[in-house]
Image (tube, rainbow, N blue to C red; front, side):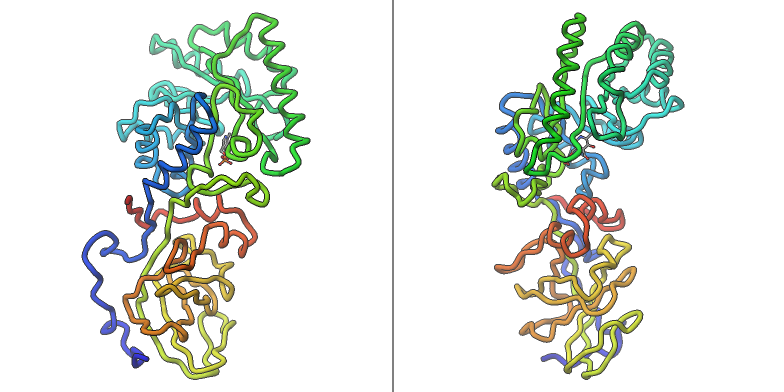
Length: 389
Ligand SMILES: Cc1ncc(COP(=O)(O)O)c(C=O)c1O
């Protein structure tokens, strides 16, 4: 085994040239995996339109490149949470329809009109502000009306929806193009509550049809529903997580062969041989039980590698699974690499992804930290460069 480094400044290995050379910590995004997952969506959508959900920096994968890639594969529309996310897409030259699914305030009406965004509305206040903004520009703004069938987040109740929609239809600057709802728990195998939500949504569609109101885009299906509740596909589907390679359905019961798109990698910055009894990191929560080879890696909770992985996270080095020792710091983490033959400074370290026959997924990290893969992925911070493969 290699002698310990004593001087960090002298021990920095020369980083190889190429992507990630500036900062060895990077998230690599496999565009071929993204294509594969998108094709799984289109196969299941069976001719319906696809709105690709790219909010939160495309779940941490990089908003603009992911959006461009999916539009190039046939996505009809993009879904974001914020007007600001819509602005970023427009400023990148993306012309496709963009649904703003999160809250829009009346003061944002001018920006929505200027950016030609399609807001999801729950009330008339914003509709009136949008109508003013649209008429100032002598144009009409397409909106989708959000129906609260059981999520109790945004949306109007099915009972109040017909009046609201009639009111919107009377505004010259507004076109109601879509009707949407969102499932609270379609990821459960037990679809009893999802079925109640469906019934409320379908009853409303029937009521509107009886009143002569027809709305072309009707949509409800998130990934869980696309994978495990095809009854809810309507005229357009709204996948997020499954595009990025993860199956949200309880027990991964859908059996879909999705491919994780993102890998999180870094390199060993420093190796130290430490005697038994040496405490490691803040709070000295880990003490070596034997003479140990400890690797310091340049990733921490400010990069989105959760502090909850202290003393329980794992990484892959030279195809071996190694434990996180001590607390994850803001910018650095320590690993016990004592049992990795031939380990060297500069070696690649995989935090999410594969090495040899071993694999760590965002779902594994989520299970260890008591959260969901969504939070792990969109928690990878902006200072981690994204490299598109
Ligand atoms: C309104 C709406 N539709 C669709 C999605 C996509 O959900 P998923 O990532 O579970 O496919 C989300 C994500 O939270 C959402 O908020």
